[in-house]
Each structure stands twice: as C-alpha cells, then as structure tokens.
Image (cartoon, rainbow, N blue to C red; front, side):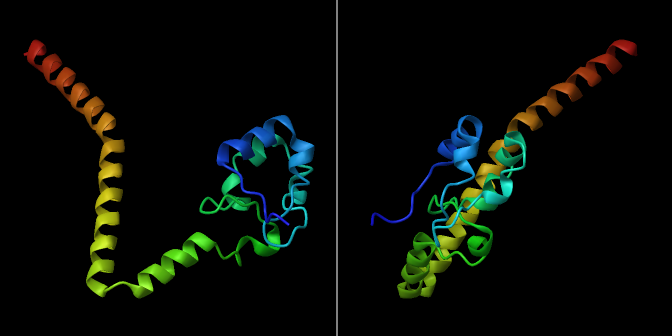
Length: 132
C-alpha cells in the first residue's frame, strides 16, 4: 500500500477539464471512498472553481464530504509539533515574519493599482491646468 494519492492544483484542474468522469471517481485521501462523487452531475467549469472545497492545498489530497472538515494534515501537525518545541520568543518572531511577508505581498499586489490611480490623477490635473 503506497498511501493516498497526492495532487497539485494543476493536476486536479487538468483532470477536471480532460477526464471529468474519472475525476469524480478519484478516492478520498483519508477513507478511500469516491471523494468527488457529488460533483458528477455538475459542469466541469463550475467544479473547477470549487477546487479548494475538496482538495487540501497543504498536503495535496482529495477529500470526501465526511473528511473535508475533519482532515488532519501531516504537514500542519508537524508544524504544530515544531512550534510546541520552540521557545515563545522564536514563535513570536516567526509569526511576525509571516505577518510582514503577508503585508509585503498585499502591498506588491496593490502597487499596479496605485500606479494606475496616480497616472489618472496626473491626467486629471493636466486637464484642469489646460482648462484654466
């Protein structure tokens, strides 16, 4: 027994697009029953938007209805154990670093929008200057 199958998001999306019927029969990573059986009557395009509802992005397993919420991921468990063994200061520093990275990523995502707004403001200013 080699254990449950692990999929990347791209593999799942490709299965949904190209082999939808086979996809609906793929086994649950926890119990082995058909994980996505309930999607058999849905359209692939709709199911593709719901990937996060039946796939664990931490470990890459497909999960059935029963195990979706009760799923315990080895990676998350290992992270919890590692944090339990860490000193509180180190945990605090790690959490702060994660928060900083998240804020930096959000700022990077907002930068193009900010540039577009700035350019629009400059065009408006030029328009007013020409009108005066």
